[in-house]
Image 1 (cartoon, rainbow, N blue to C red):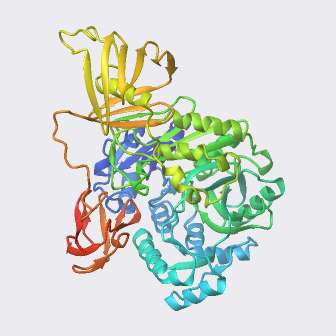
Image 2 (cartoon, rainbow, N blue to C red):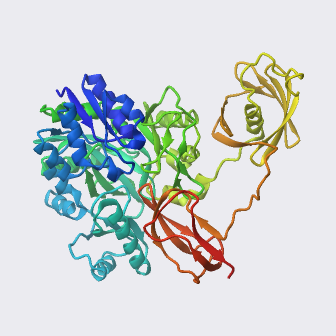
Length: 639
């Protein structure tokens, strides 16, 4: 076994790898950018080396600097985690040339699966079913458009390099093909440095089911399947293992296909073979097709660990150190059910825009596994993926695991940035999801209901008012009128409450002329009924965590209130990012909803549109410019 390894990553996966290494007695070396100097993954490791810079290109994508750090610190091997350089075969070659061990597959295996078109051809040869499509070298617009017509709409345009939904577009008809192709190429070029695409048939009622495989270079096994059908913009939101509705016959067929794929390339380490499944008539052994193979550990690997009892990172280290497969296929158990929900800093009502901010408060319930790379006080940076944590639960049955997921999400507390927590809670409560009736279109079909922000109850507003006054804990002179007025008005965003302090821990709170008797004794009692809630006060904000999280801006009544109406004439950047394209010129007439600017932030493109009809008065930015949140981009005049 290795004495010391370097972890060439950051965030929750770096912390996850460090945890297993600590359990195995293996020392760890962290690398970090300038902005990550005090990050959690740095403190989780035994040693740390600065790569400098802020962006990935300046830090975590600097393979030469990472190898130098490994050699300088005496590390014997490098674990890439996922993302960044994890599927870069040139990085693997450089590691081995330096006399180090890459904890993952060979460069040859990565190259074999790195381009989707070549991978599909290889899988056909190995007898693995593939989706009908065009995977040719001719990338001209006309050839691709003709291929789409021959395949039959709807089709998917997909980048041949990379994954995660980047460079992927669904096209419903021929009229939208050219624009979708240009957008997919542009995004693929920015994300992967390769704008080549393939075109595939879009499967109706598709389910995304993937199989965890593990190889030692000469043989391979599978550790059953995960269902990752709950997706938004091809990004996974909630994953589970095993797949609901899975039959023994189909599990055997998918497992065999995945193992054949791994054996065909002499795979070594942890990998995932992803399949698209036609779920229109249940799960059938003749209705699944190979999509791609991820030659690395997946974000959602914890659900597989939960149902098999296997530590996949420990297996990675053992095989990379020269051991064979730790278990034979027949010895790998499958017990119970598990879910993973991805908690992100993102503004859901604004279209899931990635968000930044300081995590003023972060806490998870004890009975969940929370894989996180941040803690209270940390900053969500605009330079990296805005994931806060993965909330993972397991139970004896799917119903039990789902109940634990709902409770775990209710018990998760985040303040300081907007998050998708309420969205995850709504999804966990969705009737079709509860029934296991899932497909990749579920979120899109019910998006309006799922993203609707829950309105706080008047009882929650009453608790928030008490919290805003700092009255959540006993104070020696609480309510003593010589120092503290007995009655105070509190402004919480658009809501106003009046709090009357009756004595230690007892309050009358009036919200919209409704009186609430609140008693703070071993919890919160409202009108005599106990309410399970926790109140957290942070600078300028109070949060109430009850059935769901509600956040209120605490307003100083002496502040001058500005106009609540936004300026529909000014298009501003909603987050820091790169201006990928400016779609209009000064003097152009535009209608409400017309796209004006394409902003790239946190690895995704975001189209900014006109809020009203008008004429472009000024273009205040150029393509290629890096802008901060709130930067003015376009000014509209009257039509």
